[in-house]
Each structure stands twice: as structure tokens, then as C-alpha cells.
Length: 343
Image (cartoon, rainbow, N blue to C red; front, side, top):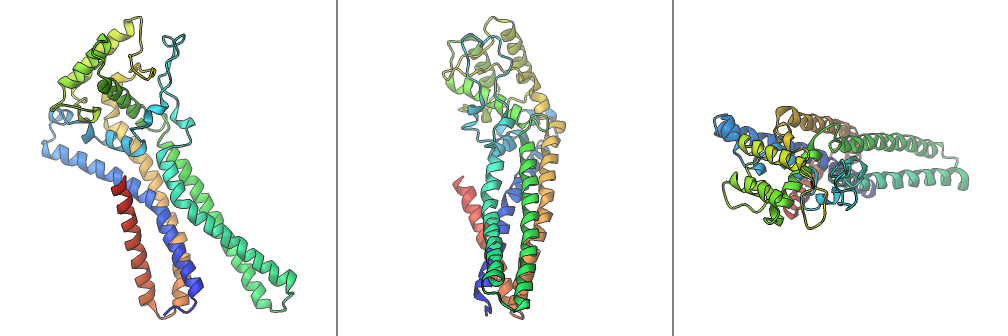
């Protein structure tokens, strides 16, 4: 039976918010491992035949799936630079640098899932400070034990909140590294895929350069395709033809592929397709994911304290503690599954 209802409800809420903050890290590692496992199964099922593996659709590759997890493919064209009529032929880059964009998908996801815990702890810390000052400055209480208790509570909360802010900031910084061009190639890859997707869907067959790219993409698809995810673009013959087509385009006077939104699409990195799907490229992403996931152990600190205090408050009633933890886990998993379903 609950002995200190308010305290125990607060601790249960705190444990729930800590678990909630952990979900983006767990989900990131889960997706990375899942897509790696899918790739390994594909290799196993195809007897590790390089030609057969390269004939797989784009949607079956690790880089495509991780790129779509890290970016919103439907809106990622917002990173494209617009074609300026007077500068279109001389512009060096096709897209804005994703590093300058603060609204990265994973960054915002982790921020959203952690901010409630941070706010609750800050409010509680301020509440303890106010009560402490009330006891000392207003009531002038002679109860030294109350004053000492509140003072040490204030110290403990300050350290607790400070540690969370430190780890919170480090995790946020690490998530941005997944988006940096110098750390991983996910941005380059997904923007190239979006460029090809735009050309494919707009289907400008009256433009010779666009028609060449579209014909190559359609020739190397097993079924009637409606987006770039269903193209077997990693086929060595497809990559060779795309490279040749791009080289011819570079030699032409107009280097930008025609499109309705006047995006600056030049496919400058089309020759790096093989490298994007190489083990070296994929390992860069996996290593960054592993770096971020290591911070999961820091959450042990944030879970031990409230669980320990809750166990003391509940005294011998560990069945209630166990039931509470199980309920929190079930609720968290349910919310997690509903969120993924809605996504």
C-alpha cells in the first residue's frame, strides 16, 4: 500500500519520464540493427552473390532505410537550392548544408521526448529552494533537521539536474553528427535519391537529359516503378550508364536537370553511388549510432535514484514497486508501438 502518496506518484512520474527520454536512443539503435539484419538476411538468401545483391531494390538497402529514418523523405526537398536564372550554370552546390538546419528529425525527436523530464526536475528544484527559503527566512523555524533535509535535497537535485543537462546536451550534439557531411554520407545519399526521385516522378520525357535518366532507372527495375525506392540502382550496369549519362550532361551547356520546382538538380555525385552503399560508408553510420547509444548507460544514474527512493518509501511492499515498474514498461512500449504505427 502507498505510504507517501504524493512522493511516490512523483517518483513514478519521474521514472516514466526517464524511460520516455530513453526511447529515441533505443529506437535509433533498433532501426540500425534491424536494417543491418535485413541486409545480412538478403546476403544469406542470395548466397552472398554480389551480382544478385546489387540487383536488390533501393528500398532493401541499409543506407536507404537509415536515410529515410534520419530524414523525412517527403519534405527533404526543402534542402534543395532554387535555380537562379542568372547563376544556374555557375552554382557549385545543389543543396543547402544540412548542418545549418536545426530541425533535424532525430534531434527534434529526442528533444521532444526529453524536455518534459527536464522541465519537471527544474520546477521541482525551484519548489525545494522556495520551501527551504520559506523555512529559513519566513518561519525562522528552529527545526534544524528540516533545514538540513531541505538543504541536502537542494544539493542532490542540483547535481541530478546538472548531470541530466550535461548528458542531454552531449546526446543532442551527437545526434547532429549523424547529419554532418564530414561524419556520415547519409545527407549526400538521401539528397541524391531525392533528386532521382523528382526526375523519375515528374517524367519529363520531352527533355532529352531527363529522358535518359528516366529510361535507365526504368530499365533496371523489376516492376512498374512509382518511386526511386523500387529501382535496382546499385546494379553495376545501371551505375555505369548513369555515370556516362552524367558525364555527357556535364559537357553540355545546360548542366541543370529540368524540373517543375526549379530546383538546382545537377546529380554531381551520381558516380559515388557504389561508395554510398559500401561497407566503409555504412560503418560510418553504424559507428555514430553506437556512439549515441552508449549514452543509454548514463540513464542508469537517472533511474537508480528514483527507484531507490521509491523502494525506501514503499518499504516492504516491493510487490507494488514491481507492479509499478511493469506498468510503466507496458505503458511505454504501448505508446512506442502506437507512435510507430501512426508514423
